[in-house]
Length: 565
Image (cartoon, rainbow, N blue to C red; front, side, top):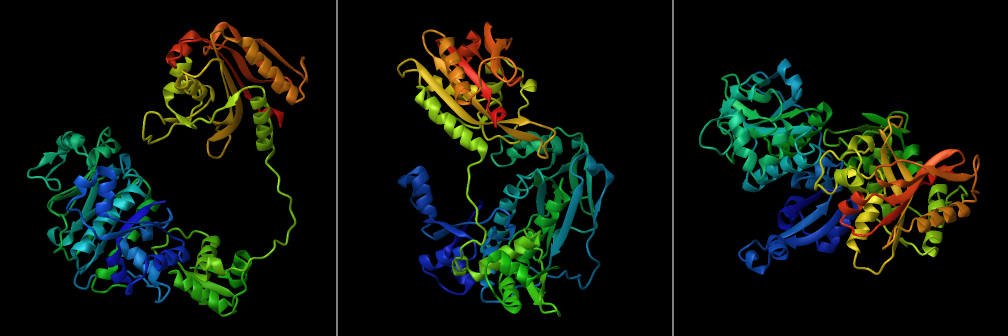
């Protein structure tokens, strides 16, 4: 969940009253939020860098508030205040206002942009009044949106400009890097796009976004009618049109690879700050019975309409007296179904006010068969002298490929698109690498080491709607001065005995010699049960042992237990 930091006194001033910490915590709970922490800039620096660094830092009290990931309208002070105030004021109604003295501004999108970032939307905030606090909140909201719905500018990039310094119509196009030249934000001279990419490789903030376009043949760029560069999205704006506290008209442009997300982001930017303009705030239907049944209350249609209006969803009872017409404002992009409206009605009613009732249906809870089988096997493997391990579901490509002497293309691994570290690049396709890393971390423990894990791996599967599936597997390793193949073989026999699978062909189980690069040649067997291959066991290859920084032989068992359900 995103966390929004706001100054307590500024928040209370905007709300029009003062709360105790306990009262504000309760207000947040009623609205579906959580007051995560009460701190100050000085406390944060002191905790992270020590008391010496914290000297001179601000003592202003900060509230850190956790907001739902799909409530983009709560990512700034203005949105939070507006949301919390609906309990005592009418929800605002938004409308588009045409300029009094000129034609609406136009943003022309050329065909060249399809190769890099094909979509763009724009709007103008007219006659806005900035203070330092409003300006800071405006910039902070852009950054919050960039990190959240914009997915670090890969889906959407926001540009804001002083409209009085530029002239429309504006053109969004794409050109070769060498053909783009302008003075970027807060720089003293002009650079070409190629020079900018080199310049920002050492910039602590912007270097994280260079990869989005640096390998493209053309870069996106926005010009005004005089050929002045407004921005080179998603990297940097031009210095000519930068906004300041004196800016009165703000031109907002959002370039994107996802048009829906671009519209959401533009709506958030405009609706959050239109209250500072000269003219600040200038449908789905559902039945009351639906909300009453789903929430577990019994309220009149009129009262439910009032509850929804308190949640910024302006609602009116229709002529039949049963249906409610709900107006979804542009700030509420999270409302996509009637159940979202029902959830807001429950929040406005108060979760603690919903009466507790005994369910009308009689059901007996049961474990999922796969989980029940896993638990039973865990108990018996522990009784057999093996210690259970719980390893990470994410790992590096090297762990499941190179270290196991396999090619990454053969593993059916699901890659993480933006891994934070090299240790978490892919979802694991085997439990073996995690167990071997656990053994390596416990080499000083008395031998032998007997470890097992029963958990899910993730495999690509084009037949699934998400392109991948979970697969429950059992893996065990035996690490000692001798390979201990007979120990791991005996463990497999015990597992089959517990599963009531008898030795033999057909409906029984048997093993046969197999070749696998992970195992020592001639010391690997494939396991068959009920006529299907379910896994392998054997002595690990010396190169595998060395690559996991182990020094003694090791045997392993790896089987798929979903076949036994």
